[in-house]
Image 1 (cartoon, rainbow, N blue to C red):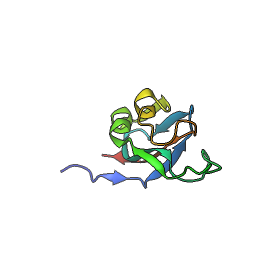
Image 2 (tube, rainbow, N blue to C red):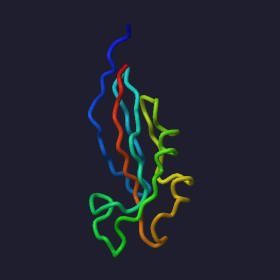
Image 3 (cartoon, one colour):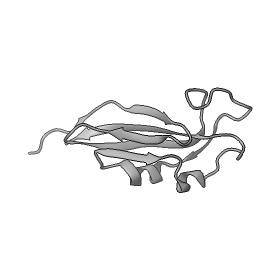
Length: 106
């Protein structure tokens, strides 16, 4: 019988345009990305004024899973070309990446 799977609580982070996505888990843990959205989901650290465009978004979970899930560390400049190409919002407003992930120990 194996050890029971221990899961840390979900963490949600904003990665602004041209910032690095930089997440990591403790030794013996790996990242599991639960949700990844690119756009202007809400006002916050990356979007401080709506400019009439909030709540335009693209689901980029599959792409971010390839980059990060199953790894202990994940660091990439955002948005990369694949995420940027989704263009969920008008091109003259800045979008950001929002990721919800957890660390699994097993």
